[in-house]
Amino acid sequence: MPFELMQERDQGFGETNDNFHLLSHELLFDRTEKVFNIALPAVQKAITAYCLAKGIKALFLDNLSTLASGVAESDADDWEKLLGWLLDLRRKKIAVVIVHHAGRSGLMRGTSRREDSVFWIIKVDEVPDFTEAGCQFNQRFEKNRNAPRDPDSYTWTFRPDATLEDPYAIDISCEPCNLETLIVDRLRLEPTTAKTLMTELKVPHTTLYRALKRLEEEGVIEKKGQKYHAV
Image 1 (cartoon, rainbow, N blue to C red):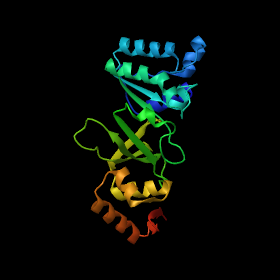
Image 2: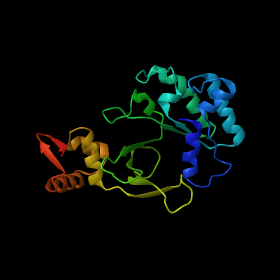
Image 3: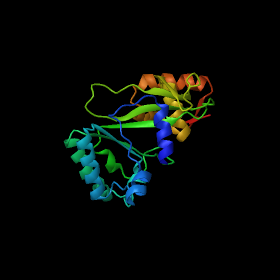
Image 4: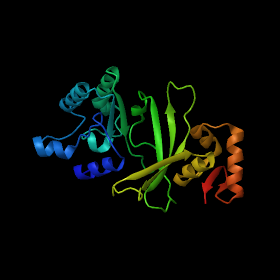
């Protein structure tokens, strides 16, 4: 992403403070002619040193595919180029949030070995029928480690804030995401069985079947054989 666009988006979220830092691959190359590749030990060392010097407690990497050149997504052993560094950051009390894209199946692209050492996996699905200016998406946890219960799912809405003088201002709101919405979003990716839905959405058998029945009665989904389909 161009540095100017990063600044515009940052400005849209409102006032910031000295604890927030943006690291731009474009700016790095312009000033040093070096490439921002987190698969390189020298870059890993530099980022770690920067975080420690600035007292940074959370590092966001957006996104994995563009930041880690030369790492085969589907090769489990290739993930070792990053795993040691990420674990080192954890030991230094620096939380790491990695943004990664899903494939056509709706699942995270590449090897599942990346999931072994992570504490949380948050899935974000765009709401396709949102027609207003801005965007809307549903968020739910697919992995949740060391928490007393599964976190709630939410629908997040981002809209341009026309009430403010700043042309980049963004209004952000959220509300609890109901089970029916999660079911329809999942079935839009591909038809699947009730058993699979129950496993993925982590809901009791009776709760799921009540939601499926309501959606069938509303004509939003239909059952063909053992699988449910979005209409």
